[in-house]
Amino acid sequence: MQRVVKPKTQRGKRALAQREPKLVEEVKTAMFIRGGNTSEMITRILKEFNMLRKPHAVMFQKKNMLRPFEDQTQLEFFSNKNDASLFLFGSHSKKRPHNLVMGRLFNHLILDMIELGVDNFKSMYEFQNKKCTMGTKPCLIFTGEMFDTELEYKRLKSLFIDFFRGPVVKNVRLAGLEHILSFSAVNGQIHIRSYRGLLKKSGTKIPRVELEEIGPSLDLTMRRTHLASQDLFKRALKIPKALKPKKKKNISHDVFGTQHGRVHMESQDLGQLQTRKMKALKRKGKQENEEKEKEESPKKARTDDDDASNEDSS
Image (cartoon, rainbow, N blue to C red; front, side, top):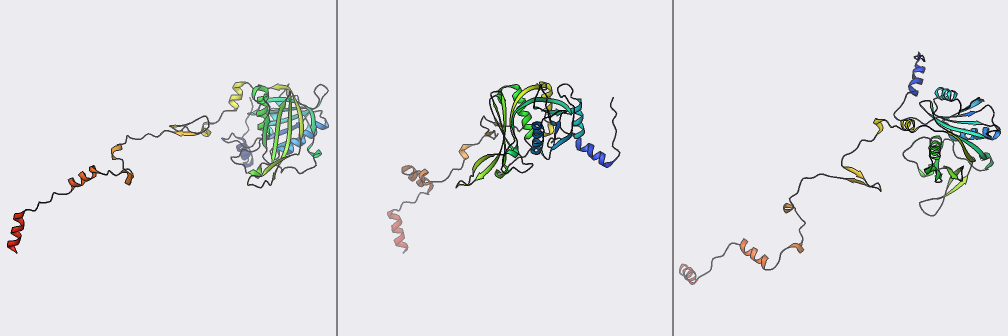
């Protein structure tokens, strides 16, 4: 049984409070680990991916004799120590040359691991142009049917999104779409390309966008995989009740996303409904004359006796 040591200082209490589960988690930290034997290519890839992930990255300077697919205890220890849930492990051997293992953890336990072999690599320093600002949130583009059909490629796509998406924001301004990462799955290979978006004048309000490759550029092949079961993966994706949107009554959405609402009203008496008065709606002719005669009081008819009486009085 593991002994729980309570913090004795305020600094220790703040550190433990920072690691406690939150409703809205912060940006995930990634670990970049070198194996006991690595090639120059693998070392360069780890350093450049570390630059893409900064400031949410930890680069291990010392070599670590790890075999992630045989024993995960050391990786879980590093995850708990650095409060990191993503890792990229690089190694090189005769059996598996230029090897990368990308993975993620849930509750400091291994969730998914995918082993990738590097077939081709071109460093960002081989592209003699201006780079993106450090910490820029990239735009991720995925191309290829395998990312939507095969289970292993679906998990790899989800892993790439977790690894490179950066902070979660509601809105992004147009000038903020500076860094573009493209992932293509073609003929059993995964091609990763990095571009910088350039906004050019177009003569209209909408600028003309051009892409300039800035590196790094990789061609990868999938090797071994260690995927979480459906139950464990479902638990990792569980959303707290406090964050779930409350269901509103009498509101629905159609296929196109249009919102429809139902309003309950009392029955109306249309006979008392006041309409707009217009000349075209007035009744004319005999019907109008008859109504005027009914409204006016009847006048007395004049006779000859009345005229005579009027003369005598005068």
